[in-house]
Length: 143
Image (cartoon, rainbow, N blue to C red):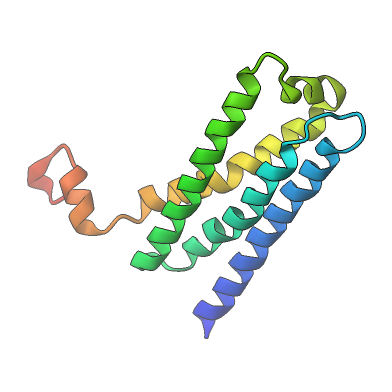
């Protein structure tokens, strides 16, 4: 019962993070702010942030590790698109930065938070066999 409560709380936290990113993305895409693709990236965050948060509900579950991996892959693929958008000749991100820098910075913090959460989840809670294979010291049983 306590595990389900923790899962619900983490799901709500992920939805709040994703919704905050979506709200900022809608703000950045509206009016004279000019960053229209922020809304599409925020939709990815709305899906991936709850997945990343729920992945923390169990340390040893392979499903939870897979969820963190899915969130991380979604984040990396979308971040590649974001970087392409940033390096284009007429970058909407730089225009939005010149208009509302605090909103862009807040959106980036939210964007990175769920990706870092998924990455930390994958690094911290590796199964013992994987830790042993990844260890540079073979004689210490991966510790």
